[in-house]
Amino acid sequence: MRRVAVVGGGVAGLAAALRLVEAGRGIEVLLLEAKDRLGGTIASEGTDGFLIEVGADAFFTEKPWAQALCERAGLGDRLIGTRPGDRRTYVVHGGRLVAVPEGFVLLAPTDPWTVAASPLFSWPGKLRMLLDLVLPRRSDDADESVAAFVRRRLGREAFERVAEPLLGGIYTGDAERLSLRATMPRFVEVERRHRSLILGLRATARTHDAGARYSLFMTHVEGMGGLVRDLARRLPEGVVRLGAAVEGLARDGDTWRLAAGGGFTADAVVVAVPAYAAARLLEGLDSKLAGALAAIEYASSATVTLGYRSTELPRGLPGFGFVVPAVERRPILACSYPSRKFAGRAPDGHDLVRAFVGGALRADLLELDDERLTALVEAELAHLLGVTARPRLVRVHRHARAMPQYHVGHEERVAAIEARAAAIAGLALAGAAYRGVGVPDCVRSGEAAADAVLARLG
Image (cartoon, rainbow, N blue to C red; front, side, top):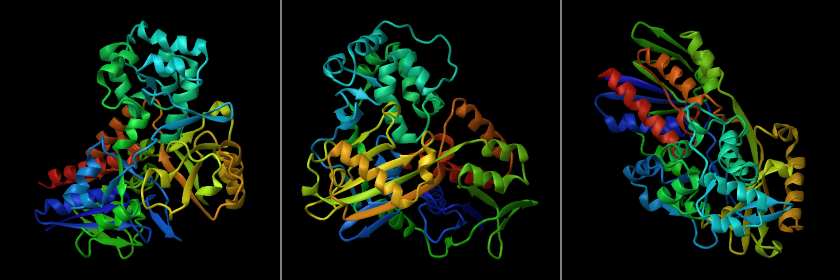
């Protein structure tokens, strides 16, 4: 019997443990989690008929790994998709909400006519976007920032009014520093193969606009916390050790020693904690690896979830939510409407509104206490949605150093990290810090790490 220890019970660690258990082959699995629950930033809270998400509220099915795991675990009938209806995303422009033009795929348009009709852009801005049709492709393959790429292909307005807020909503980061190759590799390939983004997206887009992409999101009927609970039940008794904070890792010949509780030994280890935590654990084994891990920056954020009677929302809730460009100089990053996106998130006649605050560009706001943070969000909802009623429910959740920042050169840094980690027998790394921040990416990362240690164990 060979023992594999998985350090960290977030989505990546949970996926790694499930993969190891699936493999069988005389493998004993230990999943060590410092907190009193699994899931990392993912959790769901139920109160007074509301279902409130602490972290991610869904996963993207175009990346297949999370859905495939759910299917293998027999959870397919526990998943639900987004509600039909107005699935559009809105952007704050001049203090009011304007719909993202149909045919806009995250960073770029596919239909010049819908862009021409949109009040989101000036006529010079619209004409600048059309230059993409004739501009040459880039002559080299060096990494560049998302901001530099969008401005180069489509101009300043396309970046400031759509690309920046949409990417900010996903990564809570600074698009001037985010790596295009690490965050949006599809667009690198579109330019390489088709030259024009507009023409390339028209030829290759599997979904026609940002609104259509919402049909590709799924969640658990009991919230993402329910998904974590259901997956954890697929692990045999004795695998999960909660409250087991690993303080250090050491090698003793071919054996790993884990400083946690009374101590554990293992033949291989999957480290599935944030990069800065992995750096502390691996400092004594490889200081250069630890330094590279510690160099990956993280952003902090908070969500403020408010519950209202639907009649207290005088302008209604258009679409599934809105994003806020940095040029608007407003204190929130984005806002979503969980009860409009998914069934069972609010009692009949009520709605949930969830605002996102902080990130790389507004970290100062996280110094506010919960009461002041809530008041700030209420003031924004009053201005943008006309909501003047006091909320019937308030929940504030803070996520300190939770979102890794894929800055320019990130792929090269990760390749170097993976090469050094592979040189340490019986070690694999997993998590959002490396090759994708979404739930499906974390599942893939955890499963790949499990496969790697299984291969090393023979």
